[in-house]
Amino acid sequence: NAGVTQTPKFQVLKTGQSMTLQCAQDMNHEYMSWYRQDPGMGLRLIHYSVGAGITDQGEVPNGYNVSRSTTEDFPLRLLSAAPSQTSVYFCASSYSGQGLSYEQYFGPGTRLTVT
Amino acid sequence: AQSVTQLDSHVSVSEGTPVLLRCNYSSSYSPSLFWYVQHPNKGLQLLLKYTSAATLVKGINGFEAEFKKSETSFHLTKPSAHMSDAAEYFCVLTTGTASKLTFGTGTRLQVTL
Image (cartoon, rainbow over all chains, first blue to last red; front, side, top):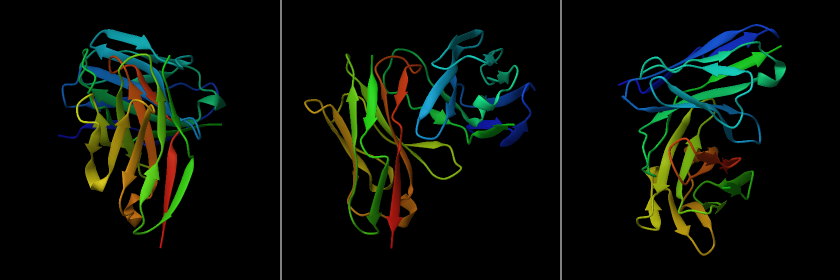
């Protein structure tokens, strides 16, 4: 059971380039999400999905796209990278539904630098 | 609207002394509250969670937290700090589905000899 995996661990992009951050989980969780972590700001939700084929925007969605074609995978696409997107990105998954006690499982993160 | 305030951005303690990391929350509904720990260059790991059962919650590695509704607080404590506790700690609130997590800005715990 690998949990939540993310690739790559590190990435350097030039302004205007595009790329996809990969996230996969093997726990059959319905809910998956992407966060960015910036110094002094905690984690902020970018996009999330409550199941295959269903995605929605979080707090800071601009400049990012997502899709969820399978339960296991939830890639995050940067369409045209900007220096403001320099951050550490975390993918997380959990069971979904109306319960309040669902623990989020986090991946190890992707450290992205945009020059 | 819901919010989480971690009252200290940085806490320094000596090894073997108690740890107190403070968290206040604001919510219009009954909350679930979590503490996560993040060691350097690692992902977040759940320490403990409160979900409207017992107000004193015990977690991993000797940590515990007490939910106090009257004070809207959920402070994290540990009787005796260990060097391996040095990390960043996040207080997290949710009042609905898994998509509605609100993170505090984090408290960096430093443990000195």
